[in-house]
Length: 502
Image (cartoon, rainbow, N blue to C red; front, side, top):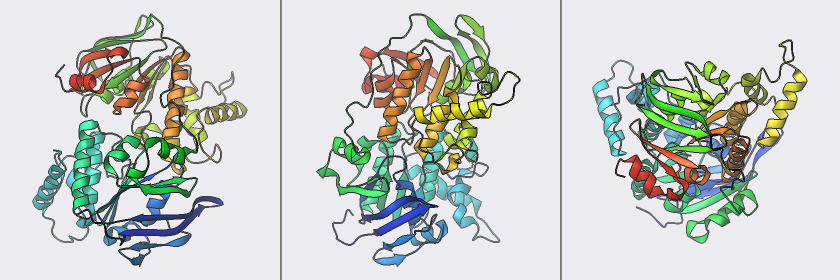
């Protein structure tokens, strides 16, 4: 039921918000119709998440008004907004790891059952809900044992388990492969036909033109444009987002990789994951991409190399000498760094400062000959990395949890850039990062490779993996299906290998 009524489901008028003396939103307006998919776009730190958190009762507004179906509302907390029919799926997941899938989906209802909980019914309802989304996840399984894709599906199912009028999705496809993304789009179109209003936040601009009806663009806490999707193109969106024309999304590298292998992996198998008999090499100065569908073993391969997963068999050679990476600490000492796809759980320490996060893996570099930390050296090193990565933080002592998602990702990268490493593995390098920051990260990857570092990049974004890699190895169910050279890059070739039909 894609209605054309002029009545709006959600109206946010003149919304302003400051944190301390820092203004984050300045008189923002947003209007969303029933049965509409409305994209909210902007650079990291533009105010998108803050605006949504005000709508969901996480933050109080300083001024302005909010209407839901022409009625004024002022949700005091997330429970209030849920009762009103407003549900949100955050970029950083909010599931309880020690609870089951079904318990997480219906957690908001369990407290109402004081004497009796019909677990069979709850598991049955949860299973039906997940299957309606096109996925199959055991509802009795603990969330901590799920893949990132499965966790995202559970988060969406949790939002839809309530009587939802407004569904807010913040970067929902960052862990999805193209097949899973299409499933999500099919579901969103179904919800749209039911009259549900969907607010969609994504840095994947090509998605916006596939799924959204309207766009509102924020820049520096203000609306910089609002229009139907049909009235603008990607270049126009980018200009409104970042205030300049973006000539090249994937910067070209001037230097070529060495002819000598830097890292050689032979018949590597894991003891406790699906990775089996993987062999490949990477040269100094090369960017090697790893692609595959969800469950292909991309992240498991990276963690095996980094010593976070146990090895069953196989050998790893660095500069021609066999090495063992029995733990992450051993891998780091061998010169291997790892930037996890899961910022919240594994990438950064949210409750520590920017300075502390960057310094922890680099204690040797910022210490004097006696082993004591040189505060001056630490400050200089951290400041240099903040400038190099254009991390938007008020100061070095700002807590990482108070940064935008894209700036948290930059801190996760900065942690490893202060080290003299030889190999760096980056899992989903631009997850939750705006288009301007993506280019900065791509340039940084180019800089690492030009310094002779071997860069291994895992990405579910196929244009990205093709745009930044020299070669791409494709996995399926933990096994290597093939390695593509640049002249053979295409989405079709990657997908054919990923599904085993090459």
